[in-house]
Length: 345
Ligand code: SAH
Ligand code: SF4
Image 1 (cartoon, rainbow, N blue to C red):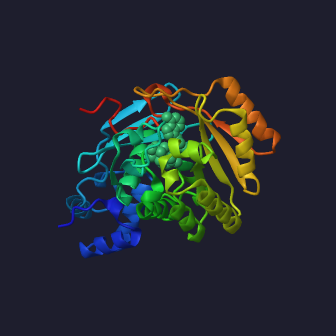
Image 2 (image 1 turned 60 degrees about the vertical axis):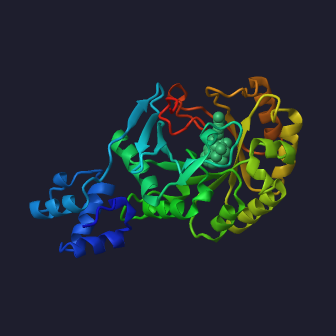
Image 3 (image 1 turned 180 degrees about the vertical axis):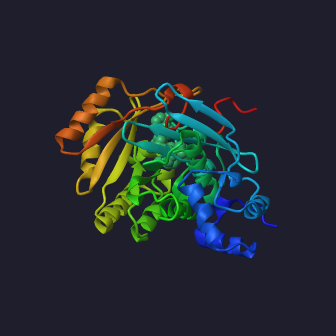
């Protein structure tokens, strides 16, 4: 008897599994619609299925969604859930409602081995990649909590998504499948610390998933320190890959810049960034550093941030500032740690 999670199946695989159980194949479509269109996660509530079929499905797929391990809601309505994986590890996912949008921020790994000095996720190192199913679980559990599907998805939670490309792309395929959630690919963004093979895959992959690169500095030495993976995928090569991506796709890349006091927040840092951007289709997202317990780093003073922004704007580079969300529950970027906020052990 199979006890695989339903979210590990593609629709065609699920249809096969359903017929293998002796059910009519159209039952698969009905179940899929209950789950992905009506957000019903219990077979007993799937009223167009016979009692017999529901019993059979329940026996074979005992739990559609695991319970949320921890749930928090911030003052700004940001929702954070902690998901306990089958092996006991914890990952976090965040839902950020706005007037006209609902963005889900998803994790791709348990921990991260990139080791950025300003990021809480990297502190405890890397444990393992998430499976496609575990990525989808985050989406479905957030939907269940919030009651509606997201307009946007960003892979900006725990982990480096391009070190787990197979599962991340498979999860995106399921999320965008018209028979399933039917999310728009162009509303999905993968954020990378600069893993070049992932950018190359994006060039070769059909679709319109957005690329965000966590740049933080365009000085090799400073970036080596902030984002140690720069020692492997240096800025020069990274820029070439991004340029190739812009040329091939015509799509705009977002550069994320966490501005840290006296490290990368000076005027010359901004001018160097302007030079780096020349010839690229890009947009800069300045991210306010979220302090977390145990970090000595300080966010750039507001005046530095303002001057930084002015220099970019003057050079004609579109720039936005990312508002910190859910700060009071440590749900903001770089504050996700998989420990459910309490110190582990
Ligand atoms: N690993 C990927 C995606 C997850 S991190 C990446 O690095 O891009 C998502 C974003 O949060 C990145 O832009 C990262 O630089 C930013 N971030 C990490 N720690 C942060 C912190 N303490 N404050 C603000 N942003 C942070
Ligand atoms: Fe990993 Fe991204 Fe955090 Fe860097 S910022 S340690 S790449 S999760």
